[in-house]
Length: 285
Image (tube, rainbow, N blue to C red):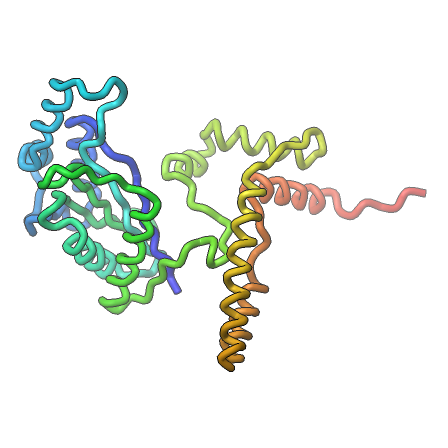
């Protein structure tokens, strides 16, 4: 079943940042930008008009005049992306996000959204005002994202698109989505972080160094907890006589990919490439 993806792509702390992002998603949008007031936004000056309509200029002025923070100013808006795998109807993705936004933010947080189809995955950018009309700040935590994923999947199912929001660890998944800017840099092969990781993995594959991989221990602990939960569910299925379900659970658990961090996978891949190039070593006599 297709997995939904909901991620935070950042958030603007300045009026110029808000206007710039609104212009970007409107320009790339299939049908422009639509707002929480069920209107279309676009044309010259629309971003500035939205900023004033949302009272973001007043919020920014109040913050700086009161000098409440010594560090970075708080976010004026959150930028959120809702996406589905290639082949999903873009119109259905947009409709599901509309319904979620209506339930989650209407009459509380001002928002605007745009459907993008410039990548294989249809996705909707949503800009949400960080402070509600009641003066409550939206703090996005892991639990918040889990809730939005579940709502997104539920709305997709309601409009006829099968979707799933199961946690990655529970599914036995081990790959994570790279942050957008890192993924794009990797595609261009010009990311310092990517090049550094490749160099380190290449040296370890060649036996020159041995690196510590603290993420592996965390993944193993998570996998053990997940396995305990699945086996307990399998035992309950057997106890009530549902042998088919118990068998399906067992097959699913057995099919889980081995735990492996991105670094370990890169080292393994490079070692496999090396063996392929040089072939099996002849025995020494």
